[in-house]
Amino acid sequence: LGALSTDETARLRVLEERMRTKIIGQDEAVRDVAAAIRRLRTGIADPKKPAGSFLFLGPTGVGKTQTAKVLAESYFGHANTMIRFDMSEFALAGSIEMLKERLARSIELAPLSLVFFDELEKAHPTIHNLLLQVLDEGRLTENDGRTANLKNAIIIATSNAGSADIIANPEIEKKTLIAMLIERGIYAPEFLNRFSAVVLFSPLDPSETKQIARLMLAEVAERVLADKKITLQVSDAVIDQIAAVGFDPQFGARPIRRAIEELVENKIADAIIAGAGEGTLVLD
View 1 (cartoon, rainbow, N blue to C red):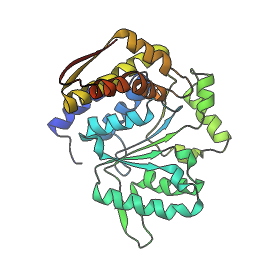
View 2 (view 1 turned 120 degrees about the horizontal axis):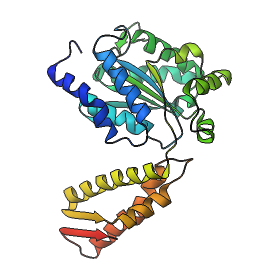
View 3 (view 1 turned 60 degrees about the vertical axis):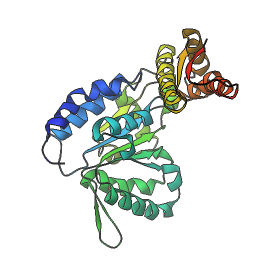
View 4 (view 1 turned 90 degrees about the vertical axis):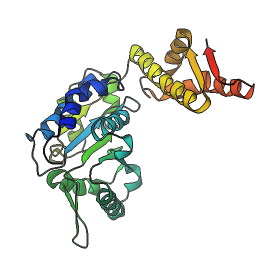
């Protein structure tokens, strides 16, 4: 990565601001991630470790994956720089070699990437031992002695562990939740200490659900305009309906996507089938 370029310095200055435009209701998480990235790229953090490593804790659907995608896009310039691993695929003890091989090959092909371990709690505990080396030394030693270098990668792991505690008490302190996870034997303290930061994601409230609905609808409108040359206009009443249907403290923003499919995308499809051409489509 070398010294900071003028372009990267400019990106770091506005990183937090850019992320906030696409991540709703997680100001603390955005602040923690942006601050850690700035520390790392200004040379304050340990250069022997990966460029950044984060554990995202929180319920499903609150923006953990979205934050990783936005960080990849904002920092590396494109969301496709994210290499994703579904950790439920590595639930068996023998799967550690498969993960090691896939991770090594991926990082050799794209050393400047965001490596994303989704739902870490579903992986076999031996996987944590493999990740200890990655997080602590920024490298991965294969069975044949070859070494894959992850010092230029950003590593993010997500976990739903402790979600019930967060939903029951949205004001829970991070250190309290971490202590509970250690006490339950879900994560060892030496493993958690290897991350640059453990970031806590809070449940969404109804007002934040409405903001997320607007963001998702903007993406739909952009896609419809590009593909079909149709300008989509959605009334506030429809947005309110989507937010009301989509609000679920247990599942976060995921029901919003289904609500948009039912209340907006289905109507767009019906209009196109009925003969709607280029122009403006109003949904109210």
